[in-house]
Length: 421
Image (tube, rainbow, N blue to C red; front, top):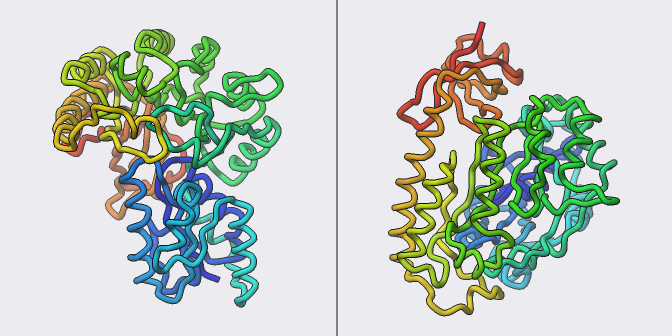
């Protein structure tokens, strides 16, 4: 059986798609729709996202082009979209199955596979995944119920995986050749077991595994403890965090029902940069939340300038049925949201370039990834700067960690690096 997977959305979705590759890769031919096209496919899996209205639309739009490429394939809809709108997806043309739980998907794939002649393909699935970076999901669900967010309804209540299970998975990933482990989940700062929290978990992973690089995907300020400040001094723990600010206005943060204010956010950032001067901090910002006046938007702009983020993901507010924010007065016109997005995008570019320039001249360790036919390598520094390295012998060092001096800023917005001899 031949399967093609289209993954939309966050790292948690990516992890769940990778799990399919790893679990069934030695039984079925499995390919990632983003990187490969099969001559024929028996099954199409669309791993959906529902975090915004645009994400919902993209998830639905992904079905038809794949069905056109593989007209005889059965279409399975999976992921957050399936969890929040099962009925809607079942009514779509060309959708054969809507599956909400990973174990249900496993059973369905086995059933479909048993109806065909199995194709054993020597772990083809594993080869389709990057061998440099592996995702490990430590928890699922969210109890925060921010006023704009549908994810608690899509993912359910918070559930932590056991420490033992996580350590075993990390060690298995390392045995399979991965160089970097990325800790992910829906709200990883809420991981807990027997009085241990996320900082304790990271400490255990650093002690009990031989991970060359360990990275956190994201965390919120209220889940940050001072223990992290010492942990980030460990050379194997990447000095980078994605901290979702969402707004630089305390008034808007209250309306969003976020569990922190800008004072707590500022304190966290100052402590991180004091512990590691070149710490990389990236964030998300929602533009045009209900009630965001021009004055409050300017507060966000001024706060962003103060923090000096390395990168910002910008989202115009998207009304989600079933959330408190969808019922709030003072909804912002789309034209205003888009204008503010452009203003923020201009600022984001300046801040990102400034952060990159501050790192020019430093020597960093970079995982060498996927050299192209010209011998150009791309990789990320530990503090998350995208770097291009030109090296005629790139294929010989692919997948290894090399010392690279950050040389200059390129017109592409990336940084040029030079391999140290």
